[in-house]
Image 1: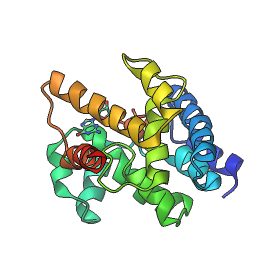
Image 2: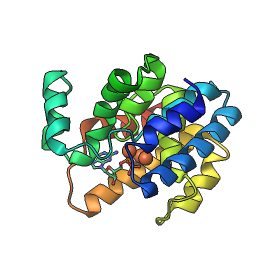
Image 3: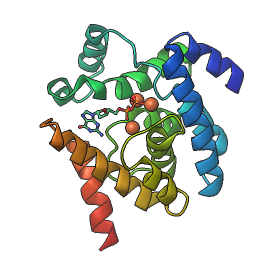
Length: 187
Ligand code: DGI
Ligand code: FE
Ligand code: FE
Ligand code: FE
């Protein structure tokens, strides 16, 4: 799908603020894809659509998770996790994106998972460090992303887990598995 058509479809789904975030993710993802030899067109489309389902009603997302037999454990964790797998589904249904690499990059952009592809890593990190983000550690994450994709991934997932724990929140198993996967591959 052509970039402008995709952006138009996504603009209809998002608030202005979230659309500006998306443009930041697109820029960052294209930049990272060029740097780390990832398919730039796939990175661009995955970034454009990554938050497609962000504003769907919780009931609709819940229904899709059950009907499509996505991991029902998701329902016990933070609903912030739901828009990623539901987004992959809706982008396929409503925007006709069929490329599995792109759909997986959308599906895992929030939780992460073990054995992520480079495209998945690029989207996960771009979402974390796009220019509109401002949180403690984001500057360091940007510096690391400029040098090493896996180190940037480790930094982001470690920070996210620490953030969730500091808020006394549950951590979805895929997120822990991503963390363990990178740490153990480093050894
Ligand atoms: O949709 P965005 O705001 O752009 O970013 P995102 O899709 O990465 O969502 C991140 C939010 O999800 C962040 O506020 C933390 C929250 N969250 C809740 N539970 C978990 C989680 N993130 C991860 N990785 N793992 C969790 O278990
Ligand atoms: Fe998201
Ligand atoms: Fe994220
Ligand atoms: Fe996002």
